[in-house]
Length: 447
Picture 1 (cartoon, rainbow, N blue to C red):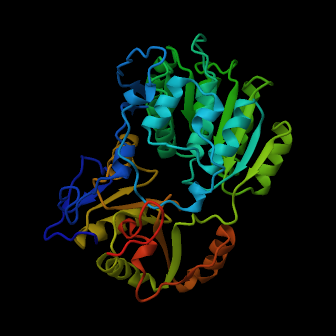
Picture 2 (tube, rainbow, N blue to C red; picture 1 turned 90 degrees about the vertical axis):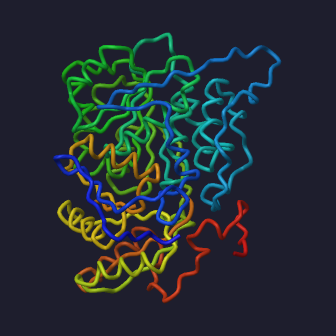
């Protein structure tokens, strides 16, 4: 359905701006509603994270007797009927049971709706379980989090009351996302303690949380380094460290901190690097710190196969009008709009709201509790449009609004993504981005 318009858009906010600008939000499934489905179900987390502290929800541990079919007791989510591309379907036919994982971990995996391992999971899980370092190149949205969280959790020893694994990510939102997935997957494992800690949250809360038992820490580099230096986060027994989006973590902004963090870890530790691109900084880091890493490369191009890219050549003044046209003509479930500054994010979100479309925004200058709320509500389908800073699965369109001054940047984007970006056509085939036009097998369904 196309993005809904409302007569009188209302700006909802706390005394400080909380990133939520919206018109009237209609019920899920109705025109203009948030929409339910797998995207919403994935995020109905039974553990919540506040100020970086994990609070796993109580689970009922039914006793499974020998001979019982334990899968009958699983609370599986509705089957994901969205079209899947070869990024996640081109597997070798392995099953999660093939990796001799703990039954409690398998229960969490299946209750996440993960039926079979994706290609990156097939390649990563057995190697990571063997203790070998990994350098993996795979696209976002292909199961990378599961590729390292599954072996990470399998190797946790609950008899040891110490930090045993670190997951380092470049952004607060990704830290919250990964930690919630970790909590969900481990909920049947009998007490795995997961903690998320990021800049912008209360340091005192993190210190108090680390005074208790924590097995897994998902963190941004600056905060975890601060906690290590204060002697609060004791990482002397960490056996595995994961760098998700390693190209960003090893950029000039973070590489010095990453070198310091590794200096506090035991020499005999396992390092897993996951990245969509491998710039020179990643290669240098690999040569310095990884021991005979197993290299995985599942990429021919950076753009997900289900995402079709176009560009629209416009002037600066035409951008909002162009967005309005796209909203009215395309059948949009949700959209993410990227800007290059916090100020532009807020201005554009306000204009979109004034046009009558529900809109959230998020940027680094917002208070962390507001960022968390926006991030959670958008993923749960409470709003159709999100404006943020940065740059991007299943299915969708990526439309680049290019001005005269940006024309040379388009070539750089094509080279970075390894793809050709074509001009936006007058009519866009709905089968390129509307899930209802596809069956589960990927065959087109007649409307």
